[in-house]
Length: 294
Picture 1 (cartoon, rainbow, N blue to C red):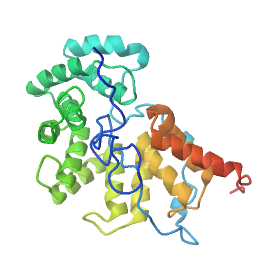
Picture 2 (cartoon, helix red, strand yellow):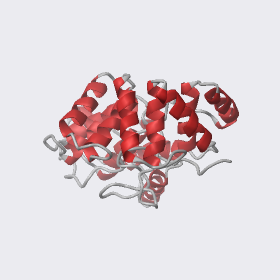
Picture 3 (tube, one colour):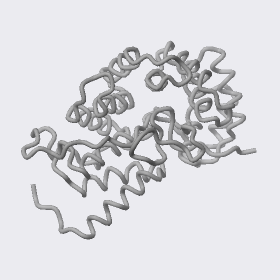
């Protein structure tokens, strides 16, 4: 039997809608998926009259690489779902992780079977399987919803040096979700993996600076982190960049670039929030004149 599809996204301020507080699934639970996505930058000052040159007009979202748009390193195309299931059953942790990502994009995945296989692989101390298992426990998909077991799985994944496992662990440590809150450790994990070039870590870290969590609020630094993650192919970070361009936060307002950035995430994840944002900006563009040449 095919259980309910996983939907974007995972343990973080998860993405189904909402610009204030923590976005949640309609049930109120954070939804499991393949990547950390924090939906919206809080209200920020308007762009300065003379924004720093490196932040003004620096991004064309069409430059974002199409490889690994999930940021997870693992995915299964619709045409490969059956093959991924077979490989997962045979003990291929990468195929199992790919099914988690595919499920987050709304593709049909046998979640109960996937959960059983990931549990077995994680018990055998496979870091990638533990990370994926944590995602299922976090969202209550294929496993009973259990914050403590999700946190334990992310801890195991991170101990095994799984980068995204550490990113997800940082989220639950920040929120005190299934574990005691530990902001210093969460911040250290994100900083370490961002410095090692993991886009999801940079994207998540950007929200610490945007919200002033544990660090002095710094919208410019937040934008730099979002931009870095987006340009490395993390489409959720591109959503953050799109919002900055739409609202003119420390960059010159550019609705065309905002629409391109939102559309990237909309097309891949079929994310309601991203698609609504793209449609909103297209409507605004229809009411405005073409942008002036740089």
